[in-house]
Length: 322
Ligand SMILES: Nc1ncnc2c1ncn2[C@@H]1O[C@H](COP(=O)(O)OP(=O)(O)OP(=O)(O)O)[C@@H](O)[C@H]1O
Ligand SMILES: [Mg+2]
Image (tube, rainbow, N blue to C red; front, side, top):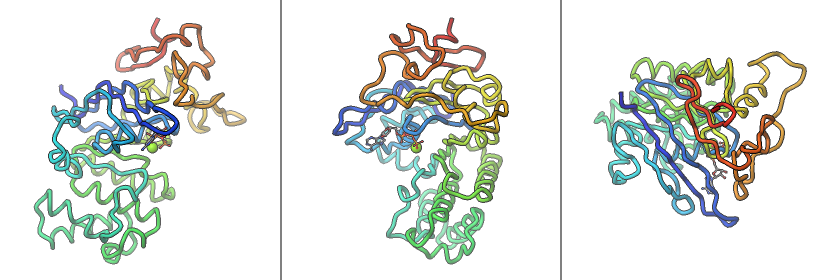
């Protein structure tokens, strides 16, 4: 079956004063209809940039998509005219941004911003859109939703802005929802409510979700598959339970052991030795090789390909590709 989203061999660079930063390198991912895929990886590994590329929101300059395709429902988003992309954005594909102010417009009230796509894409009357906006703000836990409709983004706290943005993203019941760290800025109870909301959306509309997070607990609760990114590359893709039971990539292993509640209990928190490679001075072979405790001479010379290591499990590591 054709997947809803198929990212194939995507390469993205940023031209900065320090030089060229190859932020996403050969990214390939598939997402089925109704599927929830988790995307994890260290800060700076290219998770947000990959998501922004799906929305055609990579700023150019400094960003440039060098190669690859992003097929959504059989159409390549990278070659579609912008007008078509705009029609798809906020209607068929919605994104909850890591930074709420990226998507909220400071000069319009929250109500107008939630109502606009409802009127534009769904053909609702102004009154019906207002009712729906009120319902959505109540759903995401805005304490006084009627007042919330009238407020401007800067009048709200960070957490409230995040909720308004979630309401906007859910309003059109998108086929694909990309949630970039949607709950990181929120307190735990609200986090749980938002996750419930997403599950509800998925039940109701069969939406597919890409969920970007640092929280592996959330991945376990929400996602069926997970992709692990390191230094701009996917290093492992696996069903969540199998990754949790037996990670294949040494970086995934480190990631799992660095959180206290998954894996065996231990006296102190484990941290992966070393730091992420300097993007302007990447090691020649495997990007993780300088930190890898299983490193072999070959790993320092050749970049391992992403290969199927077990049924439905893909890994970018020579050790698993004998
Ligand atoms: N507009 C930009 N100009 C220059 N470099 C950028 C730009 N946007 C992103 N990058 C670089 O691309 C790399 C990947 O960034 P990205 O935001 O995708 O990381 P991330 O995996 O989402 O990290 P985090 O977990 O911190 O959100 C980073 O090193 C970042 O500095
Ligand atoms: Mg990010």
